Image (cartoon, rainbow, N blue to C red; front, side):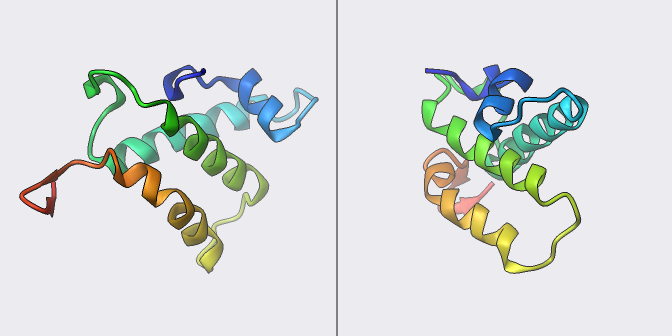
Length: 102
């Protein structure tokens, strides 16, 4: 099983079904942004996990896919739908203290 920290351009291109190299730099930027987004959402860096959960891989790929396919800035509900879809997975690992978000 691939960990979220091991997601790279080749793995993401396979997930996206992209077989050209034209967008490799863009995909790399999107991967970095998706990983940063998840760490920010969790209020926890990947390096702070004792064991990095496998289930963080799918939200990272889905967010990367969403951003790759919709490159313009969006204020509609589609961005929120992607986050909402994976909030249950991400919230299992989100840092809360005393019931409050850190």
